[in-house]
Length: 177
Image 1: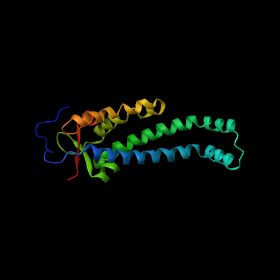
Image 2 (image 1 turned 135 degrees about the vertical axis):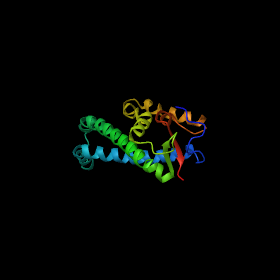
Image 3 (image 1 turned 60 degrees about the vertical axis):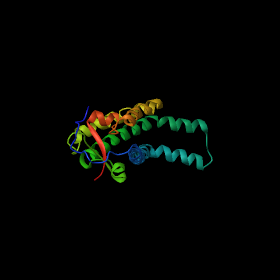
Image 4 (image 1 turned 30 degrees about the vertical axis):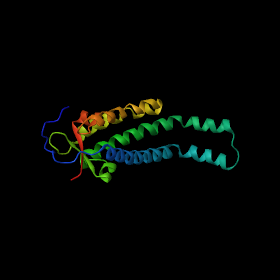
Protein backbone atom coordinates (compact mmCIF):
# COMPACT_ATOMS: atom_id res chain seq x y z
CA UNK A 1 0.00 0.00 0.00
CA UNK A 2 1.45 3.33 -1.05
CA UNK A 3 1.07 6.38 1.13
CA UNK A 4 0.05 9.81 -0.15
CA UNK A 5 2.76 12.31 -1.16
CA UNK A 6 1.97 14.53 1.84
CA UNK A 7 0.44 12.41 4.61
CA UNK A 8 -1.16 14.20 7.56
CA UNK A 9 1.61 13.01 9.87
CA UNK A 10 4.31 14.69 7.77
CA UNK A 11 6.74 16.59 9.93
CA UNK A 12 6.85 13.91 12.61
CA UNK A 13 9.92 11.75 12.91
CA UNK A 14 9.80 8.21 11.49
CA UNK A 15 11.00 5.69 14.11
CA UNK A 16 14.44 4.25 13.46
CA UNK A 17 14.98 0.55 13.01
CA UNK A 18 17.04 0.58 16.21
CA UNK A 19 14.08 1.92 18.17
CA UNK A 20 11.82 -0.68 16.59
CA UNK A 21 14.22 -3.53 17.41
CA UNK A 22 14.53 -2.30 21.02
CA UNK A 23 10.73 -2.11 21.37
CA UNK A 24 10.28 -5.54 19.77
CA UNK A 25 12.90 -7.02 22.13
CA UNK A 26 11.02 -5.70 25.16
CA UNK A 27 7.77 -7.14 23.82
CA UNK A 28 9.35 -10.54 23.10
CA UNK A 29 10.67 -10.62 26.68
CA UNK A 30 7.19 -9.81 28.05
CA UNK A 31 5.50 -12.42 25.84
CA UNK A 32 8.12 -15.07 26.68
CA UNK A 33 7.48 -14.44 30.38
CA UNK A 34 3.76 -14.93 29.89
CA UNK A 35 4.32 -18.10 27.85
CA UNK A 36 6.70 -19.46 30.51
CA UNK A 37 4.10 -18.76 33.22
CA UNK A 38 1.46 -20.60 31.16
CA UNK A 39 3.83 -23.55 30.70
CA UNK A 40 4.55 -23.65 34.43
CA UNK A 41 0.85 -23.54 35.21
CA UNK A 42 0.01 -26.35 32.81
CA UNK A 43 2.93 -28.64 33.64
CA UNK A 44 3.51 -27.82 37.31
CA UNK A 45 2.82 -31.33 38.67
CA UNK A 46 5.23 -33.03 36.27
CA UNK A 47 7.90 -30.37 36.82
CA UNK A 48 7.69 -30.86 40.59
CA UNK A 49 7.99 -34.63 40.08
CA UNK A 50 11.04 -34.21 37.82
CA UNK A 51 12.81 -31.89 40.29
CA UNK A 52 11.95 -34.18 43.22
CA UNK A 53 13.53 -37.11 41.38
CA UNK A 54 16.65 -35.02 40.64
CA UNK A 55 16.99 -33.62 44.18
CA UNK A 56 16.53 -37.03 45.80
CA UNK A 57 19.29 -38.46 43.63
CA UNK A 58 16.87 -40.98 42.13
CA UNK A 59 17.59 -39.77 38.61
CA UNK A 60 16.58 -42.60 36.34
CA UNK A 61 17.16 -41.17 32.89
CA UNK A 62 14.50 -43.34 31.23
CA UNK A 63 11.91 -42.34 33.86
CA UNK A 64 12.73 -38.66 33.46
CA UNK A 65 12.47 -38.88 29.66
CA UNK A 66 9.05 -40.48 30.05
CA UNK A 67 7.90 -37.59 32.27
CA UNK A 68 9.18 -35.04 29.76
CA UNK A 69 7.46 -36.85 26.86
CA UNK A 70 4.18 -36.74 28.76
CA UNK A 71 4.51 -32.96 28.75
CA UNK A 72 4.95 -32.75 24.96
CA UNK A 73 1.31 -31.87 24.44
CA UNK A 74 1.48 -29.36 27.30
CA UNK A 75 4.45 -27.65 25.68
CA UNK A 76 2.65 -27.41 22.34
CA UNK A 77 -0.47 -26.12 24.11
CA UNK A 78 1.57 -23.46 25.93
CA UNK A 79 3.12 -22.37 22.61
CA UNK A 80 -0.32 -22.01 21.02
CA UNK A 81 -1.70 -20.22 24.10
CA UNK A 82 1.35 -17.94 24.13
CA UNK A 83 0.85 -17.20 20.43
CA UNK A 84 -2.79 -16.33 21.07
CA UNK A 85 -1.90 -14.12 24.03
CA UNK A 86 0.75 -12.43 21.90
CA UNK A 87 -1.82 -11.73 19.21
CA UNK A 88 -4.24 -10.25 21.73
CA UNK A 89 -1.45 -8.21 23.35
CA UNK A 90 -0.27 -6.73 20.04
CA UNK A 91 -3.79 -6.14 18.70
CA UNK A 92 -5.36 -4.59 21.80
CA UNK A 93 -2.36 -2.48 22.82
CA UNK A 94 -1.75 -1.16 19.31
CA UNK A 95 -5.46 -0.61 18.59
CA UNK A 96 -6.14 1.15 21.90
CA UNK A 97 -2.87 2.92 22.81
CA UNK A 98 -1.00 3.13 19.51
CA UNK A 99 1.67 0.66 20.55
CA UNK A 100 2.70 -2.17 22.80
CA UNK A 101 4.46 -1.71 26.13
CA UNK A 102 7.82 -1.95 24.35
CA UNK A 103 6.90 0.74 21.84
CA UNK A 104 5.50 3.02 24.53
CA UNK A 105 8.64 2.64 26.66
CA UNK A 106 10.91 3.37 23.70
CA UNK A 107 8.78 6.36 22.69
CA UNK A 108 7.36 5.25 19.35
CA UNK A 109 3.83 4.61 18.15
CA UNK A 110 2.00 2.94 15.27
CA UNK A 111 -0.32 5.22 13.32
CA UNK A 112 -2.49 5.05 10.23
CA UNK A 113 -0.29 5.85 7.24
CA UNK A 114 -2.84 8.17 5.66
CA UNK A 115 -4.52 10.02 8.53
CA UNK A 116 -1.90 9.79 11.26
CA UNK A 117 -4.60 8.60 13.69
CA UNK A 118 -5.04 5.35 15.58
CA UNK A 119 -4.86 2.18 13.56
CA UNK A 120 -7.88 0.48 15.15
CA UNK A 121 -8.26 -3.12 16.26
CA UNK A 122 -8.92 -4.73 12.88
CA UNK A 123 -5.89 -3.26 11.17
CA UNK A 124 -3.77 -3.84 14.30
CA UNK A 125 -4.74 -7.51 14.10
CA UNK A 126 -3.82 -7.59 10.40
CA UNK A 127 -0.49 -5.96 11.22
CA UNK A 128 0.21 -8.59 13.88
CA UNK A 129 -0.73 -11.38 11.49
CA UNK A 130 1.77 -9.97 9.01
CA UNK A 131 4.52 -10.38 11.58
CA UNK A 132 3.37 -13.14 13.91
CA UNK A 133 1.72 -15.73 11.69
CA UNK A 134 4.82 -17.95 11.58
CA UNK A 135 5.36 -18.15 15.34
CA UNK A 136 3.66 -21.54 15.89
CA UNK A 137 5.42 -22.99 12.85
CA UNK A 138 8.68 -21.70 14.33
CA UNK A 139 8.17 -23.97 17.32
CA UNK A 140 8.03 -26.97 15.00
CA UNK A 141 10.52 -25.85 12.34
CA UNK A 142 12.88 -23.19 13.78
CA UNK A 143 13.86 -21.94 10.32
CA UNK A 144 10.28 -20.64 9.94
CA UNK A 145 10.94 -18.04 12.65
CA UNK A 146 13.26 -16.19 10.27
CA UNK A 147 10.60 -15.67 7.60
CA UNK A 148 8.94 -12.69 9.37
CA UNK A 149 12.31 -10.96 9.64
CA UNK A 150 12.28 -10.63 5.86
CA UNK A 151 9.60 -8.00 6.45
CA UNK A 152 12.06 -5.95 8.50
CA UNK A 153 14.64 -6.33 5.73
CA UNK A 154 12.25 -4.41 3.46
CA UNK A 155 12.28 -1.54 5.96
CA UNK A 156 16.00 -0.94 5.40
CA UNK A 157 15.20 0.25 1.88
CA UNK A 158 11.96 2.09 2.59
CA UNK A 159 12.34 5.85 3.24
CA UNK A 160 9.52 5.64 5.79
CA UNK A 161 11.07 2.51 7.41
CA UNK A 162 7.86 0.54 6.83
CA UNK A 163 8.23 -3.21 7.26
CA UNK A 164 6.04 -5.75 5.48
CA UNK A 165 3.52 -5.92 8.34
CA UNK A 166 3.26 -2.10 8.32
CA UNK A 167 2.51 -2.17 4.61
CA UNK A 168 -0.13 -4.88 5.09
CA UNK A 169 -1.94 -2.69 7.63
CA UNK A 170 -1.27 0.66 5.93
CA UNK A 171 0.62 1.80 9.02
CA UNK A 172 3.75 3.76 9.81
CA UNK A 173 5.76 3.81 13.07
CA UNK A 174 6.61 7.30 14.33
CA UNK A 175 8.36 8.90 17.27
CA UNK A 176 5.88 10.11 19.87
CA UNK A 177 5.31 13.84 19.76
